[in-house]
Image (cartoon, rainbow, N blue to C red; front, side, top):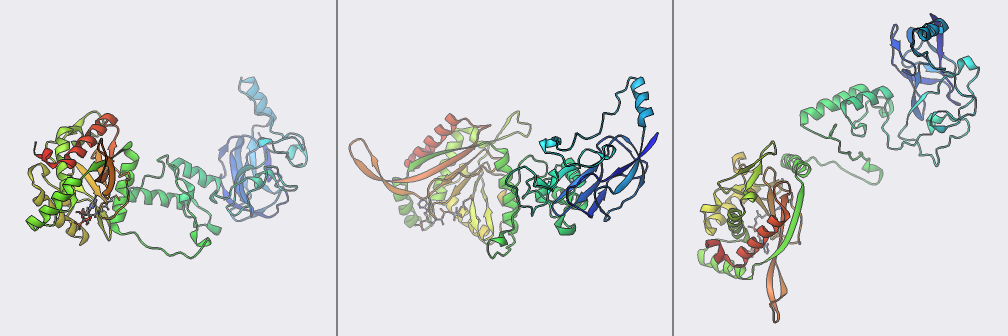
Length: 451
Ligand code: CAO
């Protein structure tokens, strides 16, 4: 057994660098190159590695102490020459030579190594970890004279955290750019990571560890005045729901235009005759319900194990309603059994309740298929997000009068843009195209609804 003092290796021109973490304690057995302490200069953090395997004896530094090149940080009890010989004799691999290459020879990462004194003091250079967020990105990876290689890492967007905290974050699958640091100068400490994990679990967030690269937070106030506006509860709920659907459902959107010239004339005439304000929406719902009967896979949901379809023997249709607090989707029940006037009345009541914030949870449940109508507002085709576990949604945009070739001449026709998004796991493109063609025919000639 022999005892070796482990000293801070060459760290360029830096002096009095603070120790921010002591990663070992007396009696710990460490492997060669295991991190012993973490130092932090103004520009970067780095770990001082164990020069060889051994047992930690007599730690001489604590967090907050300042060290420079040559400061003894601890003693390491090692097997020494005797132990190495024994290891060799017993067939075990002896510890590799830890002496550093000659001054000027490339070190790890191809960087020239600074001269670090007498041979017995030569150690592998401190493990580079990360540059501080405020570091300007260097123009090249070559170190400036007098600057140790580890300070030259690019890293403008790399969060400020010690290697140990990074390890903890890696273990939990936490993206450090998402974590707010509470340590000195905004450094992320272990408790920040743990707090983030707790919060993520509590809020049902899935971005930690989901494998989806997160968007690094930005300080927008750097570019102009900003203010914070809390999200309404409905918006937060629908955001989660939409995000979940977007991530789970492989979407395809099929567009088409339905000729609603006759339907529009009928709608206006019936509004007058019945005294009920009939918008396009109830007609769309009715036509969709008939198309769903012909294409029952659109009226299904994928079983959670993905092995079968749940075919629904009923037809409840949701429609997206724009409210001051965000998007809600009330559901009209049993559309197969209802006429246009009844559907118009129910849509009107549900839309009013939605705007007044009086919809009950039950009135938004059980939908088989949804319609998102932006026709009252304007705009062309769009790509609605499937309201999972439903398998499709129809987007309806504002109808416009357009010239249509009828074989002899161009005739003015009122064309309504339709955008059908569907879950490609359940519905094939050809099936979807047939559905939208049939829907177009139903809307073009409402008599087909009665067939
Ligand atoms: N083309 C032409 N005109 C249309 C039309 C279309 N596709 N759709 C509606 N219109 C007309 C209506 O007929 C009505 O005209 P009149 O007053 O002359 O009769 C006018 O536009 C207003 O209709 P409306 O949109 O208020 O009524 P609606 O029954 O068609 O729609 C509702 C009700 C609740 C769907 C709607 O108010 C709404 O909230 N739409 C927004 C849905 C939404 O936000 N979707 C996005 C979800 S994804 O982010």
